[in-house]
Image (cartoon, each protein chain N blue to C red):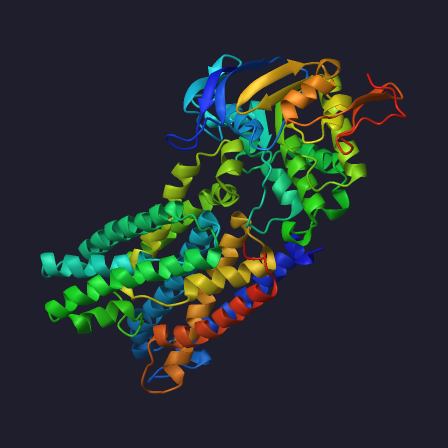
Length: 331
Length: 264
């Protein structure tokens, strides 16, 4: 009997998460070369307000939106592919988005952020579609094998990207998109991130269909859900979310893999119920990584991607060991 | 009525036909068993009937409409299907799974009467005490009952089941068969199921359709099918049939004539 599935416990977890998120948000606003104490937070002087409105609040918003978006993108990908070991950052979506940004930068020098975003989205959708095509052709349905195919596919895509960047002497630029960091986020250049909100709402609208598709093609067909149509809807939604985040802040490893898995452990895989919690947890995780990254080498910063990589790898190993102890639980 | 019009299918070019020009119809209100040896084409036929598989040629009409061309939700409200191999990776609770049986009607927003139907379906398969368990915490038989409850919650005129008694103990197997029988008798439902055990088919079904090598070899009442020469043609083995307490019994576990009992 799983008591966590009941409504009361779920809302307890959500409220607990919200408190943690609030504390993290305060820290995110307060920590920095110019510390802002809690007493000043509600009535900041002009200099403090300048700092808050131009840098710290945009940064906080960007952290929350990117964390939520990448976690939800991972959740949707895992559900519709019925595989807990795939995620946009380990199955080619992120790599395709980076390739898209590079191509856009090369073909249209000085292209706007929005222009880059459009190209990144198109290439990310195409890249993810190729992965899904691969997936449907693989005889071997073992989840680990599928995840490995995803990793290799992502590796091939990023090899192409690195090759092009190397030829054009753009390797350093590549670093910016592959290593997510919020240090450059400020008012006036992070706003395209708000697009993930709209896409997230769309994902929520389709949540029950994603759950049905996650039960497999035959169950979906029986319930009158067009399997392929929903699969491709999911693909577009998760690719857009991923590409937007990669363009604005860069890739954050493991997030899309571990956050949905941990939420699923407690709450199961009913997407309409887990999606809001996954979004909150993803936001909280990135917030935590960002605050850690800003404090451990103060006053310098460690990119959020590095912190997320270290923390995420640990959680990931734990998830794998746990899955190995309980065969069948991951299938 | 489900009307199968000369359906043929092979899984790839040049492969032997798993369905070879099958033409058969299923009028409403009956319980029909599909029987036959492994590879006879029973499951493929069931998949073709329920649009899980588009046959190479021929068509399946549900009340005159091609099932592959009708609106998916319209078909889902009239016909429910449960396949044999039901491994789903999603961790859902039993009650959530059964609620998804209402998806064709509700698109996820369940009305009060939906909840009632869901609770009744859980009750029917004796799964109410386990309603909040996750599927991966259940035994094979319990999971099978949860899936059957989902199909019942779909509340369709046609119920198609592929070996629904797999994994079930005797008590629950008998209960499911009685439930399906009642669904046909009291509610006028049409039940078509693939069964392995010819004796279960004979005691609960109105009609037995026997297949071999992708073809229907016999289609008749239990009395017409439960004969040694017919069973030998269908299954390729000698099976003595006896009448025990008024019930025809194919002794497939003892393929030698049993002298103590009078052969039919």
